[in-house]
Length: 292
Image 1 (cartoon, rainbow, N blue to C red):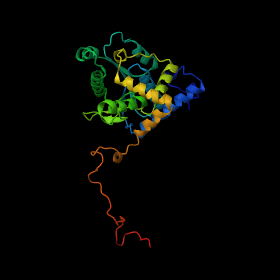
Image 2 (image 1 turned 45 degrees about the horizontal axis):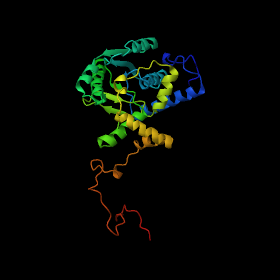
Image 3 (image 1 turned 180 degrees about the vertical axis):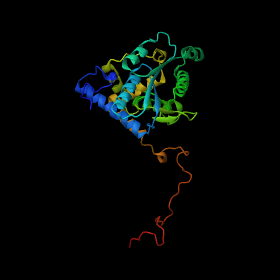
């Protein structure tokens, strides 16, 4: 499938020919396709707004979606979008030049949310929550203007797992970022096709492809972030027990409401037991034969 050097999208030009990279690429493609199919992300005639920050995850997302589309496995229209948030020192020409070179339809939007975040967030607090809300609002607006049915983000398996533990440790709830949801207005889907893909694979892939990575200095420069603390905890568990991350991630797909404590998910009050001597079998013409 990937061995014909002439049968590639420009995003894969110059890809390493090593067996290791080919396995990595096939794994990410397979896992992305599984998420797209399992969570029902494809609608006939759909147009997706693929959000591109310039980080390793969003580059991986863009390349793999185009790989699937190139192979005829993703029958949707893709529009890449970068929201330039006015961050000081942001290299504004990198993404437009890259997307032009790759022949990827795109829209670059400038909105100075950086000044708003810095002005509104008290000193010593993290910017992530407000920054995310402002960014999401603009992306929804852009999706509507472009006739898109979905906003597509590059969150991967580890983002989802970290968010679960952040909610567990700090939010007092069992919740995380779902692979698919509908926005509050009800007119747009939000997809995370990399939900099954490990962060380490995204990093290896983007690095091997030599994509022009743009670091996020707004949030990444702040020490003591709760997400970083959770990441360090998970890293420690993974070192002590390799494969632990994937086991924990699988648990998010294997919930048992009757074994939790949320009465909104399971009717504990209505739970009945059988009386002594009650076999649970009913008499009558349709009753199963009794053992003698």
